[in-house]
Length: 169
Image (cartoon, rainbow, N blue to C red; front, side, top):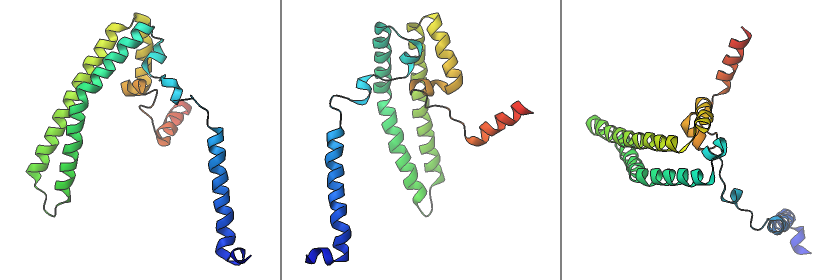
């Protein structure tokens, strides 16, 4: 067969066949109706064992927080682009850059203030035991780590090594 004698074909034809088999096999192995954790998320309510009513109330507070901060997040993104454009100029205007940075800080402060309001709303929803559990988790991971299922304050290997040396010495 003439096609098989071509060195490129010797490599390409089996590769194409292999990819086709992998594609078919991957589709056959897919599990239907298995979404990402079936809509259940870790995070705050998983850590403090919220009741269904608490879970709904926390969800409402967090949805409101996201909606309230959406405009600020968009503004910060837009301002970051402006700051980058100004920085890219041969002669950036320092005054303009400082003005943009001040605007970014204002929006970030507004988001931070709204986040604190949400935290206080959640505090009112939890009982004393749940608040104590959440406080311990916040000590270890920070509030963002608690809300994002433990993906908060992570320390690098150097810092872990420092802790080991402190414990040993």
